[in-house]
Length: 174
Image (cartoon, rainbow, N blue to C red):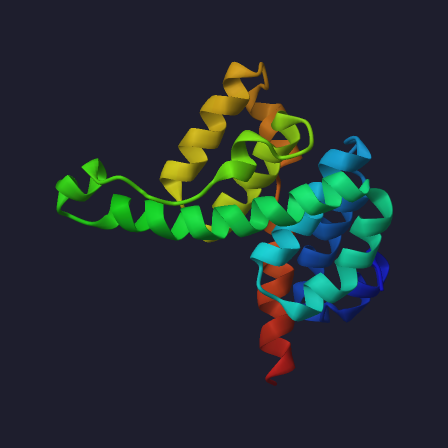
């Protein structure tokens, strides 16, 4: 189970996805922790058992135990936050924006890895889950840490993972 195995499962009509996945993951030039933490957290966020089954072992092999746990934690906490904050944003009654979230988010303050890496993973998960408020929040943290736009887009690129997940899950029903 690996990136190559996942790419081999992509149908011919989605050849662009195969090429993009290879370039985003295979040729990223990122440090292993940033790359594989993003791969793992976005594989989880994609909700695709196929994608997670193929990419998780390789991610685990390339991450320290702390980074592996933190990437999974980023996917988990952002799944919760993305629903809450996206709902808050979408409601036309703006008074909901003043309500206390009341959610435990301790891992954000102490993820067990470099805070910038955790924020990249959170940004990528938030992009998949479509939470603009969370994207803005993580973007601000990254900017304060000195991360430039081009760098943060490259490091948190999740488009390949999500597109492959949607395609392979659709193929499973064909």
